[in-house]
Image 1 (spheres, rainbow, N blue to C red):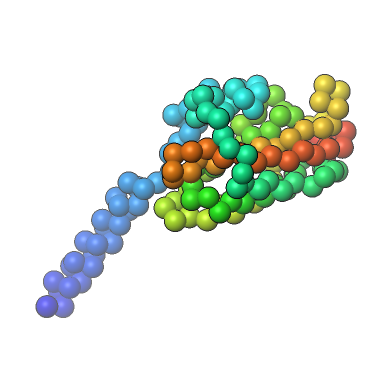
Image 2: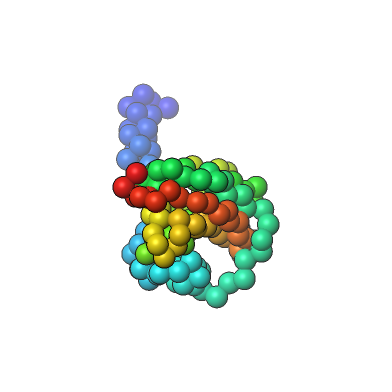
Length: 157
């Protein structure tokens, strides 16, 4: 093959790469599922995101500290060996329950770490639960959750 043809094909391949990648970019869950982000309870957020589902309580591990002294930056880790399409993170301490939704790439590993804000109030007594819902590639849903205490002052932390 001539050098110029080879270089021309290389440039063409590089130019086509962004178009290929944009075809596999993540879903904008805020635009496609807007009621998820205004839901006041975990159940309402799950219903807005996935519909009426009955997730199995297996295969999803949520790790949070037993006591969070700084509610402004609570570390959360979500792990699962389940082949997944989507992972949703929710909580029941703040006014809106949805925290994040991740689209898992094909053959991706579910091992996510993030920090979230949680506020202790008189209503929740500083006690709450962080929940993760995994939508498996098998079409089933799986759930894991863990409770924690957040020191009064929470988001101001």
